[in-house]
Length: 252
Image (tube, rainbow, N blue to C red; front, side):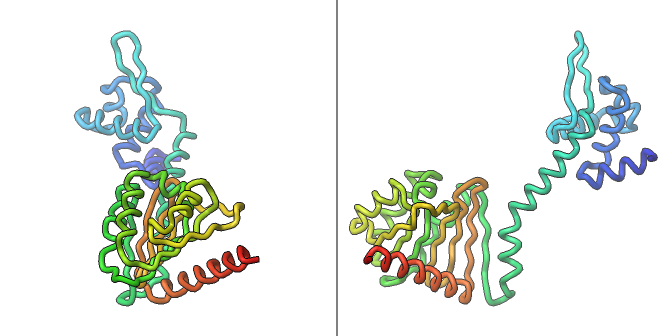
């Protein structure tokens, strides 16, 4: 295979043209100086350091010190698979947002996507805005995992929410944090029920009159805020089915 073809393939894998040229030059040279790599690759020496740093960050180039010389060496080609895996992981993390966008019709709905704990806090900083006395606030969650994201912040949020005249019903995974909130449910202005012990939730669902907030409470932490009448109604009905099922079993 010709050098140009190899370069094109590496570019398809996610390398820039300079990164592809430097990687191929280093691969053929073995441990080499910047000057040698620049000469072999045809990339200007002033650019080489930046390119090498980029390749090191991708995990496909290393530094080797021999005496007073600093040499650079390309990693084995198998390491290129790591670049593909990183792209697959990034795409996988985007799938929930892409699916949500795909299912919503333009002009009828609204969706926002938030990454990381800072993004989740952005959602919760605004979640109570616009709610009126008597509005329903429905929760399906693993309280232990939910609080573990930032116990102080979310404990303060629950206290703030409790001061509002909302109709809060909470279905929680059965654990010590859930039982604590069951004990103080009157103080937090909510009614708490437990899911069966075998249930293992990895996401938190909040159903409001006009929106849904879905938060993945395991890594990677994300929140999706959706405003769509049909989806809100569907989630509310599913919540009611679970709620009534739990109440009837406890009554027995």
